[in-house]
Length: 122
Image (cartoon, rainbow, N blue to C red; front, side, top):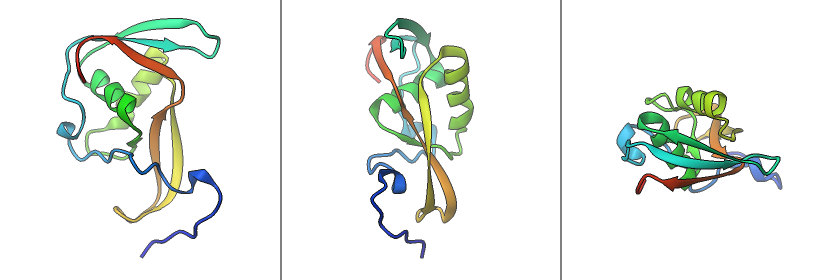
């Protein structure tokens, strides 16, 4: 059994509400175009429009952190969101995932201010 000794480091355990994705239907379903506002570190606002898989991933991250490893290739979409749209997404690494027996695993979360400004419900 993979148990980790508890320490004072808050990144020793992933957030309790992190979403573990097994299939696309585990995430928000709306794929229609939606606009988002991203506030940069400099305080400047930028508006982007996303649809389909990119929207699904960002809507999921707006709700809660998401485990990196997934059969639906979340990492590919995260790379696109970071590189092409400047979405501030970070990855925290953890050890000993009891659910998968992985020695190391990551969890994505938003590290800045992002909000959906139109496009209906998630």
